[in-house]
Length: 507
Image (cartoon, rainbow, N blue to C red):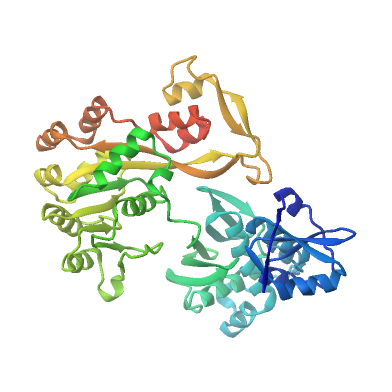
């Protein structure tokens, strides 16, 4: 039997809860998805994030408090955070760090016996510390965790909304144990500290499957680790309409990816959301009547109903070999994670010529630069002109925090940098900084876009071997909106700030 909540608890009520019983543990409350909020004369109010709660858990709470249970619905993230804050012993990484002794001066990692490192890495405080670092990174919506060793100790930073933020770090003498613990979890060789290693950790945090990609790098002071957090339930899947494009760009891009054949490219630096845009394009065009295949390095998120191939160069599965194999699978649409070499570019181009739609990414600064990049990879100009249908350049910008964002004046230098005429933009939205945004004034990200759609005139320019600058001028003459101009649109709408647009774009 189960019971359902009848009322709703606000985030403020959940955040203000206190410990109502010493008999309850964080593990028990999280397992049953319950959080006692308040004691009344006739009932105990219990928050839950599940639609229905096990009646046996409710009976136990009723017996413990000696009164009826009244259920209140709440958000999962704030409830779990409150449970760990109120009911868990040493509930945060910072409290665990504070409880650890400073330790001896300690031998350097290279001087530690391997057995000692393994033993220390498996001790409860180190295991708990590593787990809490990962958990708190997930709660902070971090995409990466950076652990770097220096002469003065270990530095830990989370990348949140594309910007690194320092957090509490373990004592320096624990760095070898923390590194070894993460290597053990990623099934890496903890005895090998001279060469870079890559591994993967699969775990469940907050009842969600999370993949952690682990990269190690030997440095002067031990090893530097970067952990890429891939939250299977939160990230990677966004509808095309949810990418933040303007109505005109959205309509033009949707038309481009709906063509039966050709190449559509997404460009930008690492971490600019290119793969997310291509996943959204796949979701937009698929009907179940076509064969869609992907080849990626790595496969970040699984697309249901789409066979995905993982690159593994150690066993000979490269982009060119995988792409050739995919073409023998009778595909209609191919998603190629990245065109990074001459062979991949050639195969992708010929696939587009033979009736396939190819979606892929390139690392270029703007949309016209993708065309000349294909020239550099050895693709003939006439083939580029014949196959490329559109190029989408993009960047991710932080959005103003909805909790603390407020109207603020804009400076003349900001207006000039954005290309806005004086007097056309008097006020912008800026976040003051609050607990919700961790004091940054920003929470979440959205995209700004520059879409180049090929037509006969631009194809003619390609035949003349024009450079990227000339192609850019021609595209802008025909109405292409630049990244900075698209950013100005978001500033006018109060979505982000001038500083963000100027940070990620060039004039």
